[in-house]
Length: 164
Image 1 (tube, rainbow, N blue to C red):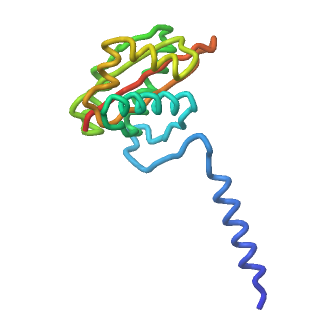
Image 2: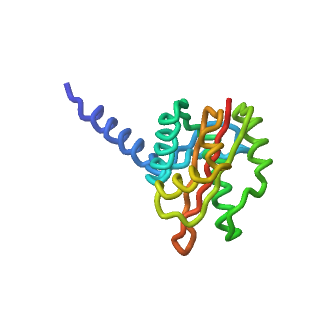
């Protein structure tokens, strides 16, 4: 029996699948009025999240889980800060409202930072600051972070926490 047409079909199918994939983002089905792009996580972001959860565990607190809706809001705010060339909590009420409506958040907190060159340095600075530490140690269930460099190579950070 000649299986050559079947093999050719399988090879073509594999080519189609690999040509449509992407390492940096994945498109999800959803409301077309909202961004449905999954934002790829940078290593510095992963490190920050691990350090925050390690701090929580060391203080007898539960670990926080990641949530893509938070990542989207954090990423937008980090890009806003870079565009404005300033660190801020501008429009926090809009991020809070979005997460309340779209992620069923009952509480929202936010830490921002600028200029730190490593995950350890930014997390240590937040832990040394009473207000930032309250968010890290707060009664939250989920979190995410966005870390982006500006045109001069300086890092901007937005870390958002929610309680579901």
